[in-house]
Image (cartoon, rainbow, N blue to C red; front, side, top):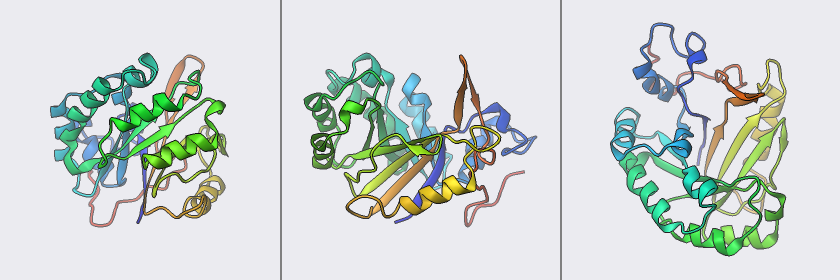
Length: 253
């Protein structure tokens, strides 16, 4: 199955004139984005969960083969810290179902301070129906155990691979027959761009690492990098992502 490449969000003002045509109305940016990329990660759902009608609107504006990954609400992962997951997961899925067949993986990015708690994680994963793929991105090293990998595998959940400054910050374990890779920050100029060598390295590792080959995969490239207290976005081309119209798509001008 193909590898899908996209970015974390699509509404960045400094992409105008670099990726989006100068005179293209912002309300048409998603359509233009979907002509170049096959997937996007909805990072804004982490901060405020959109209404079902908003998800349905995104479905109507994208091609039938477009895949939308949804970053789970911080209420579930950072406020509740996975406790009592039934209501937050049900609310997330009730709204995200507005995407219909566009709905891709749900990303659970755990807070850096959350140490390993397998019963807590397993209870959360059990709230997701079998037809919803879940990727888990822990950020505390206590999670890197065989028992954690087994818990993910038992639920067919994927360990989210993550890269920072050209190096993996997670084990490269295959726990499902699909995968999810997040690229947070490269080292090429201008920062935080990923250079050709780094992208090629991941391109070589992605299909072969781990015990099994994936039957499907979703790669999301994060294009935001922190500068002190301010977050700045970068256009896909400046992040080292090669951009060109997808087959069968005509660019908007």
